[in-house]
Structure formats: structure tokens, C-alpha cells
Amino acid sequence: MNTMQGGAVSVRIDMPMAVDMQVADDIERESVFVSPKLKSMRVSADGMSAVLEICDGLYTQEVVEKAYRFVAAMAKQRSGFEIKTFATNVRQDDGPFQSGVNEELMRRGWVYDYGKGQVAYNGPVLRLARLINEIAGNLYEKHFDAVDGHFPGFIDAEMLHKCGYFDNHPNQATFVGNVVGDFDIIEEFRAANSCSEGAIMPKAEHLHHGGMCMNPAACFPAYPTLQGKRLENAGFALSWLGRVFRHEGRNASGLDRLNEFNVREIVFVGTGDYVADRRRRALPLMVELAKTFDLDMEVQTATDPFFATVSAAKKFYQSTQEVKNEILMPVLDGKGVTKKIACGSVNLHGRFFGEKFDITAHDGGVAHSGCIGLGIERWVLAAFTQHGFDPMRWPVGVRDRVFG
Image (cartoon, rainbow, N blue to C red; front, side, top):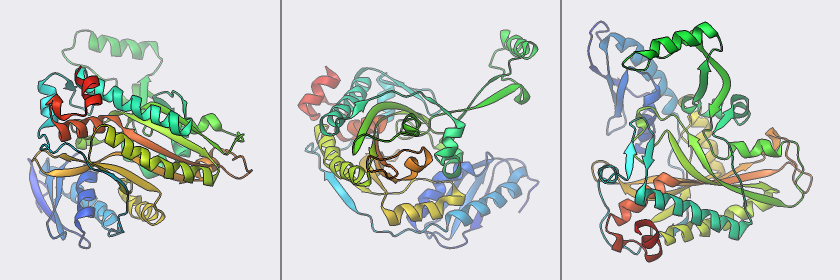
């Protein structure tokens, strides 16, 4: 291994143990958080090794050492758990899937990609996004008497710590900072940018981080509003459209994976029986929503993408306890191959948030909670993939609202 060679280099490393395709996919996706100098990591077909593409050979030894520690942690993940399907919908549209949806949406001017995991959209895409949110919200109000709410995009770091986010997903946190409130420092920053061709960022020591983050999970802001309360009834439901921020690194791509996106959220808080009943009753609603937009969909057992050093233990717990289900829909990847993406999740939290925020259920016990989050932009991507751009392939009620 030549650690003094400049320029891009490729290095093959051995896995501590063979990994299957599921773990290999996790390794490749999460490898963006190994090192800024690691361009990519690809696991071999037999799961016995991986090839590292390193941006600069001068950092080969450093990157390889981190990569070894990373794969050693990730390879401990257990897979092969029984995947259970709880709900399905089969679309009526028998037309082919549309390839290159992200590119075509941009070509038509309906989506603008800023290139950093953020998009703007208008026209049919905006109307479809609003319609998905509207119909989901109406279903939640009709079936669960859900109270409509609103929460800020900022969240206190102490709150994220209490919710366990820094322990489970530290790589996806986005911190908010501002220039130190000092006259000379502010003037220096202003003057540097007054005639520069590009943005000049403040010096690191001139940035103040006041303990605020961008909210990475739509449900988090709801629980502090119940701090120290005892619920008057068996439970209640709260629903809203939340803005969510998750740092995806190089994984950010089109509508598939964004650093900033919208989630139609519903949270259930109450007795254990109340929350379990609402989760059960929610599954047919996911089918009804998919049927409204005529989309292939299934709800299956799943796990979250935890940070490497805690991934094995956390995923094992979620798999064995079946506390997380994902709403999966087929789309096409960049090569035209069908893949399933998670367009939402149905989650049980047990008493976690009830204990953290001292929420008491009507029966005097610690409150249980659960939530459902629907990723609006991914529903949009799935709809355009499965129906294409010919309005006549879309369901009549949806077609009229989306294409006018």
C-alpha cells in the first residue's frame, strides 16, 4: 500500500466476515460517512471484500483504517429475519414504469434541483404533493379525529438528545449557527463578502452554535408539548405537515433521497391498547391512500439506518420486536432496474417518549406512542414512475386535480 501517492487510488479490503446482499447495500449506502476522502465503497458479489475509491492517495492509510473499523461494525448486523407483509395494493394501470422521472420532471420545469439535496417544484408536481397531503390529512381526521397542528423546523439540541437522535443517527444531524454577535467580527464578515465573487464563510471561531438543529424527524416536536401532562381520554391523535432535514451526504439524489423534504405525520399518544389499535386501523388506510393514486404498494417489517457503531444492536431490536413497518413502492433506478423505496413508515415507540417527557396515560400508567410518516416527495416520485406523463393513465379523480 503506497500511502505517499497523490491522486485517486483504488484499494481492496477484506470483510471480517462474509455479508449478504442486504448488509452489503447498507454498507455501501452508509459508507458516505466513513471519510470525506472516500469517494465510494463497493462490496464484492460474494460479500467477502470491498473496493474503496479514495480521492487522494496521500490519505490511503487513514481512510483504509477507518473503513476497516466501519465494515467491522456493519458486518455484525444480522439479516435473514422474516419479512412480514401487513398490507398491499396492486395498481390497475397496466402500462410500463416510466424511466428517468427525475430528469424528465426537471426538463419540463416542474422540478428544480439545487444540487445539494434540496428541490423546488411547481405545476403538476406541486399539485400532486398538495393532493397527497390533503387526502392523507382528511383520512386521519375522518378515522382518528386527528387534530391538525403545526411545528417549527428548528429543534433544540437538548430535545434531540432526549429523543436519542445523537446516539442513533449522529451522522444525519444538521446544526444551526450564526455569526458571533461582535461588531468587529460581523464587519469583517460583511466586508469580506462586499466585493467577492463567491461567498466567503466566517472563520470557524467566529461561528456560534447555540444548540439549535434542523428537525430530523417530523414527530419529535410533538412530545414536548405534552411534557408533564396526564391525558384526559384513552388517547388522541395529532396530525400535520412537517418539514424534515436529514444530512444524506453524497446519497442525496433527485426526489429519491433529499436533505430537506415534507412529511405528512400523525402521532398517537395514549394507553398501550389505544396506540396498538390505531396502528392496526392505520394499515387499511395506507391501502386506501395507495388505491386512490393507483399505486403498487406494500407495508412490510423494516429497520432504520442507524449509525455503524450501534447499527447491529438497534436493528436486531427493531427486527425482533417488529416496531417498525415501511410503506414500500416500486420505482426505477438510474439504470432502469426496479427497486423499492420507503415512502413512509408506521412505528411503535412503546413508552419511550412517555417516559422521556413524563406523559401519563388516562389509566395512570406511562403513555405509549406511535406515529406514521408519509414522505410526500417519494409518493410523487412513485406516482410519476408508475403512471408516467400521459394524464390518461392516471386515476380520473387524481388526473383532474394534478393536470388540470
